[in-house]
Image (cartoon, helix red, strand yellow):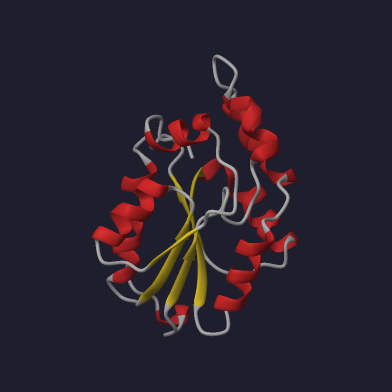
Length: 166
């Protein structure tokens, strides 16, 4: 990505969505099925309740930073994701999503995008619930806030890491 001056000069606060801003507990049941029902899992995302602690942090961060969103959700979920963010009154910001066919672990896809963002802007912090994403980001020199206020199932962690689905 090339640097676009229209983005502004403020540092970036980068927020994950699932289990950081959006409570996925109600749709994790779709991941317990065999085979996992990914279409139902992502279709239910528009009904996610907000996680107030994460939403408050995003809103507060907008005072000093440009807020951007970095999610493992596939690109096909963009319209629903952007509508959900707007409905929650979250700060407007660019949404980075994985390609529809990208099945790499979340820690790889997210770190790649973080490094790309950091080429031209200060990344003030990453807020994410995925422990492996957080650990890799810290090793790469990023400041991390661990979002421990959501509820992730073993199935969701497996989806993030082994299946590259979210």
